[in-house]
Amino acid sequence: MTKRILHVVTNRAHYDDPAELTGLWLSELTHAWHVFEQAGYEQRIVSPLGGQSPLEPRSLKFPNYDKTAKQWHGDEAKMALLANTASPDDIDSKDFDAIYFTGGHAVMYDFPDSEGLQRISREIWENGGIVSSVCHGYCGLLNTRLSDGSLLIAGRKMTGFAWREEVVAGVADKVPYNAEEAAQERGALYEKTLLPFIPNAVVDGRLVTGQNPPSAKVTAKKVVSVLEGN
Image (cartoon, rainbow, N blue to C red):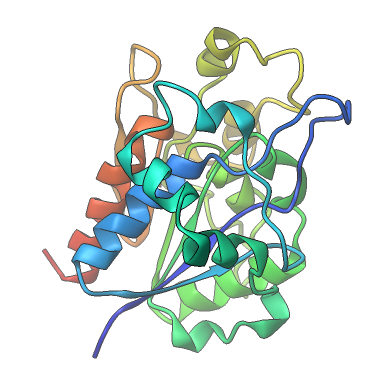
């Protein structure tokens, strides 16, 4: 049976200051989408509220605006997928083998407390599926609890955008909280590379996480590997 992947994207378009724009980091979606497409998987996109997912302006500039991002951005049909994302209420978790949380600083605002996304993640996990994220996408896992009340990430190895990377990116004064610290406070066994912005993916059973934008492709490949039992 064909495997099915549920991508999660943001609805948020700005930081606390409405003039400071953010949104989906496009290549974190496109790199993974390409990997899953090559594997022959079916794919769908969901967001906390459904509807439009705005793009992070910096993800549309060199060096982040690479081949897959440009192709997606120039494809009306693909852009329509981001204009009309499903809402969590539209999603039956039984239809999916894995959930993949994309990043961009916007997700720090609308991923953590989305009960709909938490439900889907919990159900996919408890159905034996894979829960995965890249970069800030792990903010969508911070508050997800399993049916026994335990936090999904507690006691599990994982990674995600590091605080050092926030500083290097020049946005440490804009973000609403320290995601790395938040994960550790919830009992996650957080790991990161010694140097910032080096591709890094961590696999702990069916939890697959990537550290930063350059990690999207390797993270997706790890998801495929786990799904295929390799």
